[in-house]
Structures are given as C-alpha cells and as structure tokens.
Length: 161
Image (cartoon, rainbow, N blue to C red):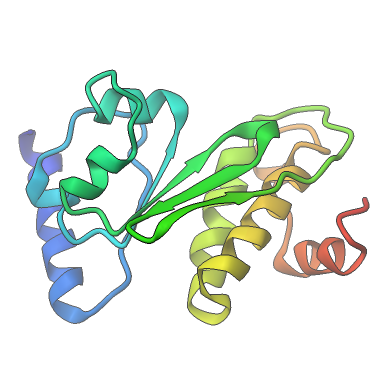
C-alpha cells in the first residue's frame, strides 16, 4: 500500500483506540486493506469508488463484511443511501437549479463530518444532502461551498433556494 497508506492505517488505528468516530472518503478510489476498513464508522463513496472497492460487484454489503460500520453512497442528483447492518436508508435529494457540480461531493462530505457529532447520522445526512445541492447552485469549487448557516436556512425553507 505504500508509505501514505501505512500512515492512513496508523491514523485510523489510533483514532479507533481513542474512540474517535472515523469517516473516510477514499479519493481517488483504490483497493484498501481490511486493516484500514475494519472499524471505520462511515465509508463515504460515490458509485465509481464503490465498484473499485468491491472489485466490480458494486455491493456495499461486501464492505460491511470487511468491517466497515456503515457505507454512505453518494448518488449525485439521485440523493444518497446509507447501508448498514440494520438495513438501507435512502437520503432524498433536494431539487435545485444546478449550474456546476464541481464542489457537490466536497460540500456533502464536509457537512456530514461537521454535523455528525451534534445531529447524529440522520440529521447529518440531511445537512450533507442540502449542502451538496446548494453547492451546485454556484460556480466553482471553494466559492461554491455553503456555510452551515446557509445549509440550515435552506433546510428551514424546506429545501427552497
């Protein structure tokens, strides 16, 4: 796996030992050892990465079998999906007038990680979905990322821009 991969395994092991909630978005997608996947709380993937990590099967339960707690599958304009040992839950997309999807995945991941401790997985996924949608209404990458205040205001308006 190489030096960078070894460092990632070490960080994940230290995080687990410290009781930290571990969220990983492997980008670019590449095969990963079980020692890294084992104990991850959330593995956040798009469909392409899912195929890479499941050796082409596209079956997220294969990652649960390798020790991942839950898989969050991002589906772009189709929303997202949470796959865990207790079942599958769909995360509805927000309908917006998209102009650029460049920052959508980063906005989703950032909002998920930032709100997870306070809102739990269901609330964090809703905020993440909203953040990803909002990011597509703006051009660019960094400039398109919404603040948490913008995400919350969007949610309070029922997902209206």
